[in-house]
Length: 195
Image 1 (cartoon, helix red, strand yellow):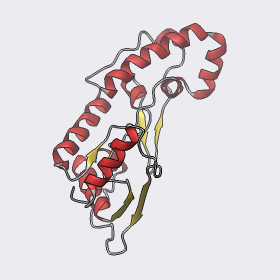
Image 2: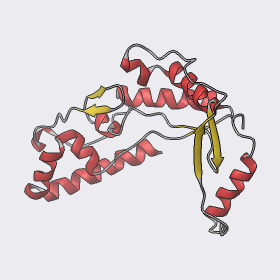
Image 3: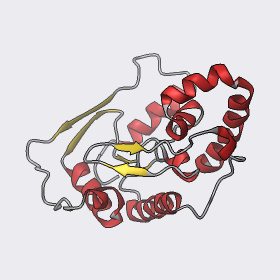
């Protein structure tokens, strides 16, 4: 692996952990900036949306970060594409607002009568962008780093993004059976996205 020289040892530690045989110590994920490397060679896009959506920038930035990072313990270079925690809600019609260091959901669902049945929209722009970034990272990695999955928040987090947390809190009291049904529908979408 390009950014670490002890992958075989790290891999063996993880295998021992999952076989419940790591009795010497727990796994440790330690990272720190390398003093001899400086980030900043990859120009940050002026438009905030490009900082989330420009696939080329994301991959160049990740490689720069990997070069500038010391990996200790069982840490290894990992790129997880991310459009915020509300990707499932975005797939259900929630707009995302990309901010400098966070992503906000707009809570579009004003009442449950307008909801219909939740089903995954595989043509959704946000989902298609996440697939594009993930596939590009997998092609770019070439064994130099790992590519993880995006941050998926199913369950009540998705419903809160759609309804707003204060409305969902009232819904739990006013229509608990409907909320359970919607949670089941969200779970199916989550499983599809995860796969």
